[in-house]
Image (cartoon, rainbow, N blue to C red):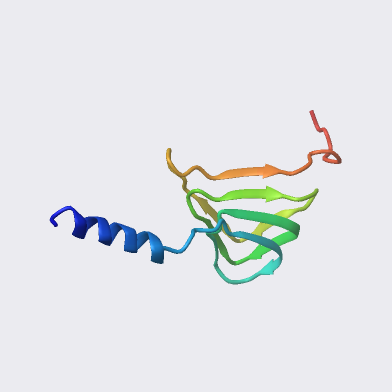
Length: 102
């Protein structure tokens, strides 16, 4: 009987647990207020401009530009502090079309 009760609790927890789905958001546009990107994946789908705003990228976030877009900061700041376990990645889906200044 001592083993049965904990097993029932574990089984009940699995029955009512919601599956965790990866969250993806798409961003573009002009921001004048502070913004937090805390989704699993942030897709940049157009030019992004920050004026007098702070962008905070949460640990574990994957940021991917979907094309050749500008991300501009005017009197603004970017705070992206990952960790060994929750890295922040900035990348582009396709680097074709980017100028080669090298």
